Image (cartoon, rainbow, N blue to C red; front, side, top):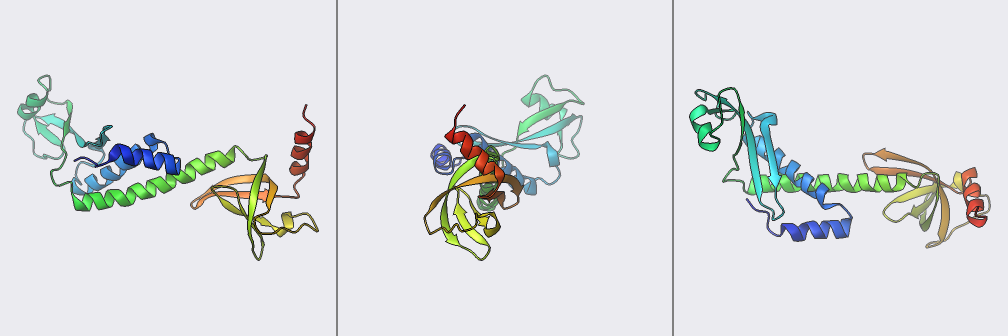
Length: 215
């Protein structure tokens, strides 16, 4: 099985979503492995999927070499094993290619669903790593709108709320205003990184002073 336009797809996702190619390939391999396990239920952890740079997909299984195979999904007879590896012997294990010829519509649909899920997870992880480095720092955000509990601030790839309790008394912001905020905390959630920002935290004044008066 070959994934058409594989290289082009990798480049588009990496350039437009900022996800490294290695993570994309791992996501696709995991997706196809998940689909394959539904077909070969008895092989369990003995399966693996590999994709080369051209998008060629191969499925491999580790089988135990025995005199006579009674379970063809997990065993291979010595005679058959020696056709693949002349050094094979009873008790050893052999990795062989078992790529299904019918790796078709159902597997592709399953793979696509899992791939999109893994891509979203990778985006969340990259975003968390990016903002974790900014904890305790000052960043600039853009006011999107005023909510019931604060201002919705666009920080680039993420939006978060600046609570009214974290706004200096008398400060009012309008749509599209660019403001500096202090990143109090960054936590990982199932929906992506949760960022706590403030305009009243003592760290804001300290950081602003450091910017104004360099060492």
